[in-house]
Length: 214
Ligand code: PRP
Image: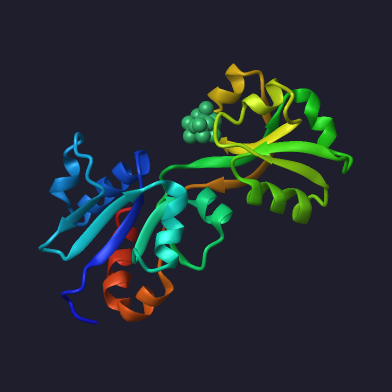
């Protein structure tokens, strides 16, 4: 494919995008336009390197990459697991480290031992379903929430939650704890399946260079 084709990156807005730009800078990929924190622009271009970057909500990154609107994406492993899109996951970037866990009050630990029907609140219903149905063989009622999931057990909406734990302070400050760990998480680079066929050199070079800085 022509060298003139833009390679497009979809980045999950916020901390992950900032960390990713820091890492890309180490291998000589910059985007000056993106450094203006007051900008409301959503798409940024580096004309010299023929690169485009856009910022989206994290859960939309695998969608843009699956459909080829972006060649490459950077997103948390949690989102990759939850969205289950047809994409290649090519690199563990090592930052954004945290854990997907089942959490709740200490008293709820017992409810996880005997396959009883319990209520699980989560921003990640697919991950919760996979864990309880396929790994634990426990039938549960999953309630989708969109944030501040720790409220679930406190206000008795749910017995436990499936959520991300980073420092553990949100749990601690709300009288909850990790009851079971589902898996470790970190930021990953993902690639559109057709882009990988069409631009193998450019994408493999990028992966190799990034690897050497991790
Ligand atoms: C995430 C996660 C936990 C918290 C964990 O929430 O859902 O609530 O961070 O971090 P900690 O272990 O360091 O306390 P986020 O801040 O993304 O907001 P949300 O709850 O609205 O999703």
